[in-house]
Length: 397
Image (cartoon, one colour):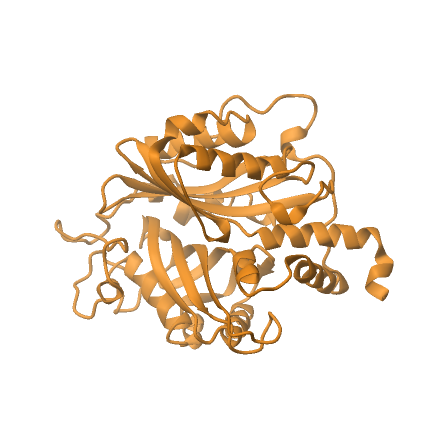
């Protein structure tokens, strides 16, 4: 997956630096027009029926008044109103969807995957929490859409016999969009949160998925050193800032590099407000700088040799004051230590790749909210696949 995503944001013209600089005052917008934000608005305000366009939205369906309206409304139509067929008009035939359990390479695969998830969770509803975006309708848009989903497991599906148990989980989907169609998407869903809330055994469930993937010829084995550990040099002193378009985005890339690659965890105290809130995987709701530091050290502790590599960054002003920044990132390393990924247990030495997305709310120069999503279940599956591959006879039992 890393090779498929490497360099995408620089290579794809619609998401280049010039497009990143586009802000709510976009092409064709009247001077007073303002792109919608989800934080203070009820759902009915996010999908208006009589609102004039705040952006020109050339090539988009008439119902969409700006890019936030587009991503919130079409997501609601497909997932909540069950109009799955809209995928045919909102995704290109050769779209690529990168998920934490693998990639889908065609529109038909996206249709089938959507239907299967609706089979398992017929009562699910996804609430738009926030959208951070960049670009315009001329070069293409990029959206990072945080959704809080809730429902019950009321129909037999991919999680086995229905239990009727409720769940709440977070998902962030990053999309590349041009003229009404999504042509590339990265989805980070916290599936481990759902597994635990449904009362399933994470170890048994991860091994079941790993066995199925190996039987299909899909494998992920330890391939050696990660990029951060090549040779005997320490991590680079300076971050690669080429993805950034603003001073704030450059600041975020810099401190993330210092924290995750150079292990300078004290930098967290300079970036986060004393009253910061951390909304993390497994629906964690934590408060204060110390909590953020513990969570960060816990993730790094599980993969102490991991290289942290940002893939995309964008930012938008916020109605609540300040600016919201979205960063999509990859961590790649080996399970060499104890840390915050409790399901791992004792260190296994197996290679693990983590795709995550983080939304940060900066206000008065400090981070007041951090929404970070990655999938612990995906990480555990990778460990199980490597362990099963070590004993091929396991598949024949």
